[in-house]
Length: 286
Image (cartoon, rainbow, N blue to C red; front, side, top):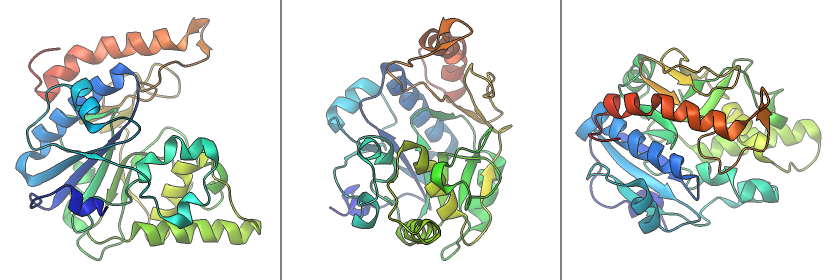
């Protein structure tokens, strides 16, 4: 199935927003609801909205997410990953992390912004607004979120030295993501002299190294959207325009932090910010 056509109908404006959701913890679905409402409050009819659903049905995902803006469409995805990429995936990556790359593009003719379900925006970051204004059709200027520390796996040597996070990713209209990913893979394989087997730690590095091949990445700064969790070096506070609540999707985190289960830290951290998030995104009731 052509995912760009499967969303149906005419696209709105010149921006396409996409999310990915699977069988995450219940807080992850609540975060998705807030993310969708925050995006609608920020972009309104200037954008189209699609949630790509994997491992569960779209109906189940909609039910668990709760009420969302009417224009949001839900797309069940399967094995649309290109062969050059799936052939390099280790089993653990194929079962989980790589879903962000399926399908590679939902809105190939638009500025496509990919948000993790646990990224909640309540206003458009100025850096994102500037990128939208300066990266037209045919541009190779891509965008990602700033991170607190680089985490690029096997791609550390060919990724930029700055820290980026794939929780927010922006692609210009008609940008060939498949070509960029293939080039990054081939470049790494030439250096190692062997076929790569990609694990979960490599997905972010692959994307960063691919999108930065032709031009330095534009960035959504940590001041605008924090990488938000109670665990150092993440930031416990909200950003000016949003927050990325890393760790929120996990059903269980199997380690302690200061002699206390990480799960308890995450639950407390989410509860601390939850009411304010509902207020900022315009959702009526928490």
